[in-house]
Image (cartoon, rainbow, N blue to C red; front, side):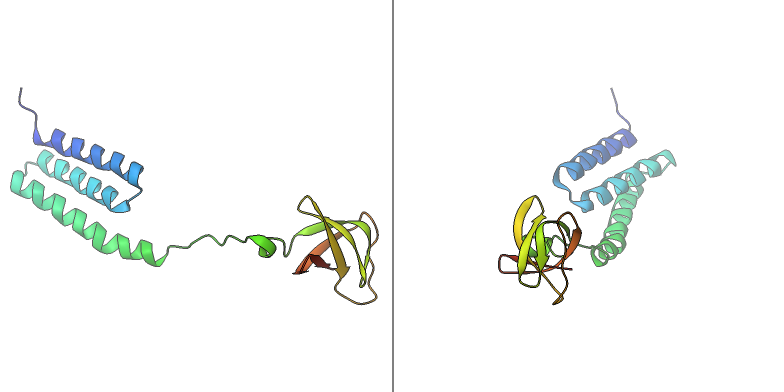
Length: 141
């Protein structure tokens, strides 16, 4: 039983595709596309030299062109943690808040709070915006 070369190229592409999913290395996907190009070369009547050439040329071209573009456009998610995650959130006033103090419910917890602007007061039930965290006190407006 003689298996045609294109089958081996597609098996190689499948193995590289599975490896891509397991390792999350995009280069493996580019090699898989090169293997598919080699299978297409066989179907067009190309010999083994042309098949290997197509595999190498397509794989190297994809790695040389696509990889730098992807690396340049890669954006890391901005994850805020700690007090940075609380800035800009809304809180509900539990006890009257003024420039001297009060209490708010922020992110499911009760926080001491004070108004950002002197003379400004917030009554129970009002929603306020947290502009800063000063120690254990939420500064709200």
